[in-house]
Image (cartoon, rainbow, N blue to C red; front, side, top):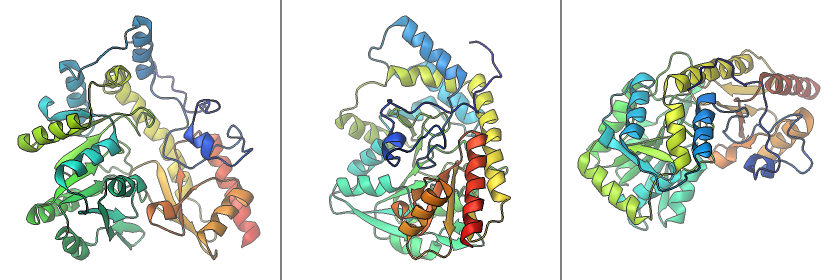
Length: 380
C-alpha cells in the first residue's frame, strides 16, 4: 500500500448530481460550493487514501461477488479495536450487519414484541425512534439533564424507565450533545440494566471521534461499530456488531439472517482493509487534529445570544440562540442572515436548539463563524 502524508482536508467533495441527501435537503438554489450545508453528520472532504487504494484495487480486479467476513476481515477489526479503542475483542464476537439502524431493528425484533416500550434518551438520534415506531413498538424517553454546560444521565428517572422495558438504545459518544459517557457512567448504566433484566444496544459509530483526551468506553450488551462517521461511509450500508455473550450472539445472528442477510458488501470488505490499518489510523489522527481546530475556534467565540455545548466527542456541535420566539424563526435567521443551514434541534427532541457539522474545510467554517458574528452583531 502506498505511503502518503498528503490528505485533502481542504478539498470540498462534490455533491452535485451524486444523489446526495445533503444536496437534496439544501434550499432551492443554494450553492453548496460557496458555503456547504452544516446539516447532517458527515465529512465534507475525501476519505482516507488507504481506503481509496483498496477500492481501486477492487475495481481493477473486477470481481464484486459474494463476500464473507473471513479471518483477515476479523483480524483488521480486532487490531483496530485494540490499537485505537484500547478494547480487546475476540474475532468470533464480530457480527457483520447491513447497517447501524438495521442492527437496532434486528435487536428490536429479537428481544421485544409489538406494543413493547423501548427506551431512548432525549435529545436523541431520531432514527432510533423511527425504527421503534416502524416496528410497532412504543418509544419510551428518559430526558438527559443539562448541568454546568453538559448533559448527564438522570439516574433516578432512568431506573424508573428501565423497569418498564426490555431494551434500551444507547448512543456513545452521544449524538447530538457530544457527551462521551465516562467509564463510571457506563458501569452504572450496565449495572442498572442488568438489575432490571434490560439489554442495551450501544451505537458507537462515533467512537473514534473524541476530544480533550476522552476515550469511548464500550457500553452495551451489543456494541455497534462501523466506518460510517470516522471514515465518511454514511452512505455505505454496513456495521459490525460486537457481542461477547455467545448465547445472545447466536440468537442475534439467527434474527439477522431471518431478516434476509446474505453476505457482506465487497466494498465494505475492501474498505475495512484500508481503514483498520496503520495508514488508516494515521489519516484518522490527522483528520481529528484538523477538525479539532474548527471545534476550538467555535468554542473560543463569545457571540451574543449564542450557547454552545462543548462536545467531548463527535464532529457535531449542539447550540442555541436566545431571543427567538420559535425554532423556525431561529433557523430562518441562521439561513437568511448568517448563511448557515443547520439541523433543527426538534428533530432530536431538543426544540429550540440546532446542530452544526464541524467536519468541513477550514475556510468554510471560518466563513460561517464570521457571517454568524456579523449577523448577531446586527441583531443584538
